[in-house]
Amino acid sequence: MNWKGFRKGLVLSTPIMTGYIPVAVAYAATAMSTGLTPWQTMAMSLFVYTGAGQMASVAMIGQGVSLLGITTAVFIMNLRHVIMSTVIMERLRRSPLWVRVLLSLGVTDEVFALETAGGQAKGADNAACFAGIALGAWASWAIGTCIGCGMTTFLPPELMSALGISLYALFIS
Image (cartoon, rainbow, N blue to C red; front, side):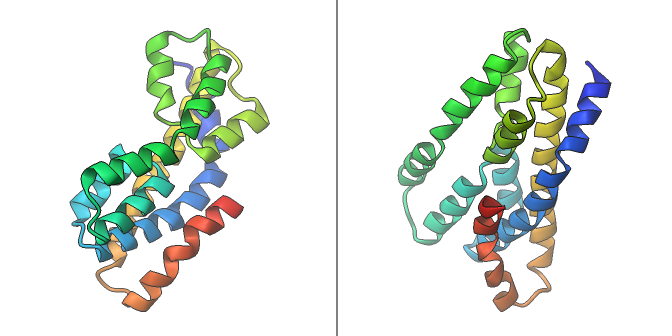
């Protein structure tokens, strides 16, 4: 593992982190208001890891949509990740397949934008840099979700519902 490249990636992910934390707080507030437990809310952040998909999922859960309906909607919403992952993995083509498969799980809109704009990972040795970017983003989403789960216990519902616009603000920024 190229630790220098990994640390560089973590530093590069700082702008993503600052955007993800408040949006993840809003996601957690929304999820908890639809009846998800803190554990379910955290599990969705850790394993589903698609902000728009998570927001849509909890809205559909609140409306009583079936699991098949939620899965289909989120699948269609996230088809763009196939294209983004193809572009990123082409840049990392000298990395072993298992590394590329693992790193593909960290591709989000913001990670993709940062990677393609900066051209950070253009070889096998730069897979570590991309890993740092992706892990920083993922960890900040999980931290924000955890904070959001805790905040729902003491902040007024009016304030928590106002956080619902944060996903749109993230896309704009």
